[in-house]
Length: 98
Length: 498
Image (cartoon, rainbow over all chains, first blue to last red):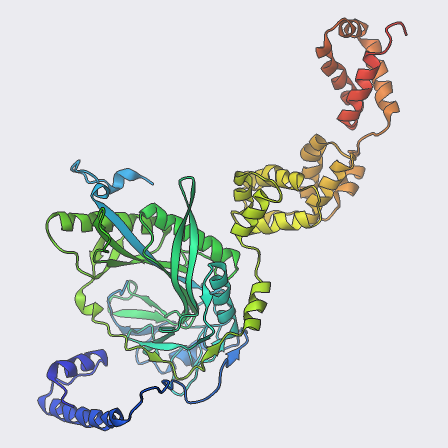
């Protein structure tokens, strides 16, 4: 399956990836087309009358009682953040999504 | 509402003369649970930032969500209360987008299989009720909180709210005015509070509303293009945003333009809506079934269990009060307006056969206390059984109604732990059932005012009140007024020759 530039740009944007470098762009396009071609083999299977299989196990209703338990401490929670203060994660300024 | 603010300053005819407003609301209600939707960290508002977090709500790799049982039960409660069909089988879905307050990069929600579908909420309209359809109610999780106005170079992120359970309640486009939207929200809030599934506090964000708004020329049966207005943080702002947006869209159409489908925000300070830049809207959520949560099945037994634990609904109570109990629509409305009052009244009724008296005490002295103190029914100090005991005391003739209201009730409020019988005894408020004391007092009064006795016997029946007053004074108000009246009358009308 051919993937056009617009589709690649859209996917890149949704995934917050940068494919502006022409060499990388060509490589990624090639790889993605191969992936799609591989998956497309599934289209050869006749699935008429077959219920879609959504879950791989028969399990249902795996539920938890509503009990609050201590989670991760604030210090531990913030430990891996590249930018933080003593209370908050800090990220590059984003506009209010409203 | 204040009509003037929706009218154009130019004196032009109001938009509503040419256009019909069509609104559907999406309400997000934060569920009252101890723990989060898919992890055990605490669901609590107002704690120090990033203290109610877990590896799941932080979105750490390799962690797995597990669904909170209470979330399912809360959603079923709301579904049953709004007449929805409860799905028998369902699963969750991932809604994918990047935002710093959503650490996983996706929200776990329900897409194609919402737990509740096809219900309704009734709102009051002139002289009747209007049905607002509920399209669906589904379960999902909240995101964390982004703070934009503290640090000039960064957005601060607090993940305490990440993973807090929500239900999203989507209405049909049945709403035709800002006022109807307001009334719908009032009813939804009353319902979620009554069901004890959400505290309904819009200021703290536990109830949030987005509005889908369009207008169409009057008489048209096709919907116009809608805009979604977000950022509505009070019932009043919902109403204002709707009115403003209707006027804006009407003006666009009047000028021969077209309304574009877009997301807008409401600027409460200026009272106007504004479009968001389209780049922010370039969403493609790529929903797919959430593989980490097992599908859910709601059995008939499960439904029954939830139904049995539900409090009676305000609508059902109102119907019973006006029907079976014969209360006025107004009284029934006041008694069911908030859950605490309704439950209190129900508890009084449980041990009080005199329903009329119970309603009168609720509507009278109890309500007066709340109003005078500026307190809610939750703060009323007396247990419901005390009101039932008080009514029983009056009905047995042990205290008069006026003594009960003026003297015993205030004493009870001061000592909620003591039964009214005991208080009445201690403060000497029990009525004298003893005709002897009344008779003695009356004879004394007659001896004091022989001329009045004469005047009465000559036809000035109005003097009965004077003698009643004397008797009540002499017995310190403890005489049963009805009984005293009979004694006083009998003595006055006795054979004049005696």
